Image (cartoon, rainbow, N blue to C red):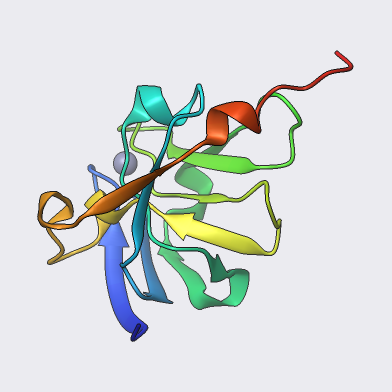
Length: 123
Ligand SMILES: [Zn+2]
């Protein structure tokens, strides 16, 4: 899959970024967070492929369960633009709905079984 340079933003425009990643295979996840936020996500890409152009100070971090994954939200509009994954902290994924010129509803998506990864035994 080709990795195009894509531009994206949160809803209010405070957070703008560019990312070099393919958009397929796009993914959804059934973990407790993803099923609530409902985002369609890009494949995994290395951290260096994401560049925040503006609004880094508008991002707020949410972590839960194992606290490995880092989920970023715009603190003004509440939109989730990207997260650092739990599977490999050097890998990130972007919310496809935040990318300019990409229709997330036109893409086929698999649902990852994040729910069974999210159980932490020793808390
Ligand atoms: Zn925003």
